[in-house]
Length: 189
Image (cartoon, rainbow, N blue to C red; front, side, top):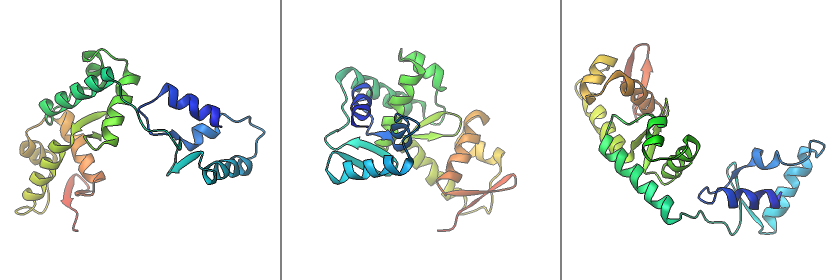
């Protein structure tokens, strides 16, 4: 398990850890689950690993970002800020910064963990500040309206259906709004 964890950190240095299930998946199939879990608990008690939710990391591991990766992260943030509520599709965005789709997903996942980007359904990523502003605009709309439909939502935020629908779903996930049939209502807090 430790060798697999070290290999993971070497291959994905900017990730904070590996999913517990993925790590346990490296064990031979004849290893009982109870033994695998007891081994993780023992490694944690000995200070070898840290368990954080469903993530496992070597106790000494800290995500590392090299200069080239930092330039890509900075570029993604700048692109997201410039795009506002009309982000580029994942595949096109990856091509524009000359990385594979897999590498792109690693980069945006890192920015999500840092609370700099927000992922909406449909593999769309938005700048966190843009999403915060959107939430304020939608909440303000509900000061004068009981519900909002898709057309009013698109008009309010000035986007196309391609991004309006995922943004509506995102605000549902963030518990700002709740879907009622074809309409959205404000979640009372």
